[in-house]
Amino acid sequence: MFDSIKKKFTSEGNEPAATTGKPDICRDKSAELFAKAKTFFPGGVNSPVRAFKSVHGTPLFIKKGDGCHLWDADDNQFIDFCCSWGPLILGHNNAKVREKVIEVMQNGMSFGAPTALENELAELIVKNNKFIEKLRFVSSGTEAVMSAIRLARGYTKRDKILKFEGCYHGHSDSLLVKAGSGLVTFGETSSAGVPKSFADETIVVALNDKEALKKAFDEFKDQIAAVIIEPVPANNGLLLQEKEYLQFLREICTQNGTLLIFDEVISGFRLGFEGAAGHYQIKPDILTYGKIIGGGMPVGCYGSSAEIMGHISPDGGVYQAGTLSGNPVAMGAGIAQLSELLRMGFYRDLNKKTEEFTEAIQRFATARNYKFKVFTIGSIFWFAFTDKEAIRSADDIDAASMEKFKKLHRELLNRGVYLGPSGYEVGFISSAHSKIDLEKAKRAIFDSLEVVFREK
Ligand SMILES: *Cc1c(COP(=O)(O)O)cnc(C)c1O
View 1 (tube, rainbow, N blue to C red):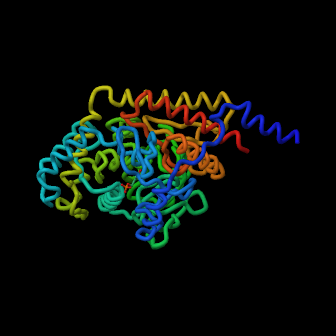
View 2 (view 1 turned 90 degrees about the vertical axis):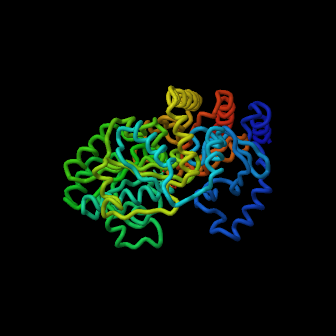
View 3 (view 1 turned 60 degrees about the vertical axis):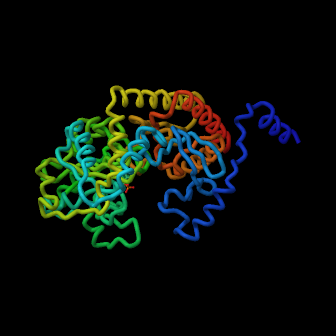
C-alpha cells in the first residue's frame, strides 16, 4: 500500500512532467507504407540500416526535408541529426543546391560524354585540397573505395590489403570482412556471398594497436598493397584515434612500400575542406570521398598524386568505368554545396556550434552522474552509454549499452528529434541547425536522458 502511494507520488507528483516517457507519435501512415514496401523490398528497405531493426517501431517514411527539419508521412516534424547519413552539411533542400540542380537539368540529365561541370567540381577540389592532384568521379562511396583498392593493388602489384575492425568502407567483397580471433588474422567474411578466398586477401587488425600492425607487416612482408582506414572512424560509434597513432600508420606504410588509403567518405569536407587529412596534417597516398561531395546526389570520388592516378584506365592498366560517373546533375549539386563550404568561417562556425551543443549535453549528464559520454569532432557527434574517457577500438563498445540507446531513440522521436536508428551511428550537425533549433533539441535530449536513466 505505502509502496504504491510512494510510487504514484514520485512518478506523477514530485517529478517534472517531462521526465515521464511521452506517448508514442502516430506512425499509421509510415506503418502502412512499410507494410507495402515489404512486399517489394527485402525487409521493406533499399539499405538495411533504414529498417529500424535496433530501435523501437517501424521506420518513418519521410515526406519532406527543409533546413534542419524532416516531416514524415504522418506529418510529424523532427529536428534531423542524421542528415541523410552525413551528406547534407547545408541541411535539407538548400536553396543554392536546389537552384543549381534545376539550372543544370534544363539541359538534360545525362550524356555519357564529358561536360564542363566535371572540370568545375574537380577544380574546386584540387585547388583547395593539397592532398589530391588528380581524381576520378564515381557514383557512391562503395565504388570509390572499391576502385581505390584496385588502384593500390595495380600500382604495387601486391594482393593483400589491411583494414581495421570497426571501420566501414562500403559493401564491396574485399571489405565485408571482419576480424577472426587472434592479434593478426585473415579476415572472416561478414556477409554471406563473399568467397572465403576473397576474405583471405584481407587482413584485419584492431584500431589503436601498434603491435598488431607491426606483427601484420612482419608476417605479410612485401605482400600488403594497401592499408585502408577511416582516419575518423565514424561507422561503428565514433572511435577517435590519436594523431600519433595515425602518424605511426603513415610511417609503417611508407617503410613497407604499402599505400595508405584514407577513406574519407564521412570525414571528407566534414572536418574541414581537406577532411581528416587536413585536420591531422597527414598525407595519405589515396583518398576516397562520398556523401558531402555530391550535395545529396549520388557521387563518390577517389584521388591521389598524378603519378598514382596515371595507372587508371585509359592512361594505365587499372580498369574502372561508370555509365553515370560525373553525372551533370550530380556534379551541379556538388559544385553548389562545395562552393558554400569554401566561404570564410564556414567550418569555424559549424564546429563551434557543435562544440557548444555537445558540451552542454555532457555537462547535463555529468552533473547527474549518468553513465553517458558525448564524443565529438568537427560537426560529428556520438552518444555513448559509457563511463570510459575514450573509446578507440570496436572492442571498447559495450554492446549491452545499446538497450539504453534504443530507449533514448524512442523518447527523442516522441519529442521531435531524429537520430539515425542505431546506437552505433553518429549524428551530424548542419549549417541549417540554428541556435534555437539546437536549444530545442537540447531540451528534448535532457528530458529523454532523464527518462532513460530513471528506468532501471
Ligand atoms: C558511407 C561510407 C561508405 C560507403 O558509401 P556509399 O555511398 O554508402 O556506398 C564507405 N566508406 C565510409 C567511410 C562511409 O562512411
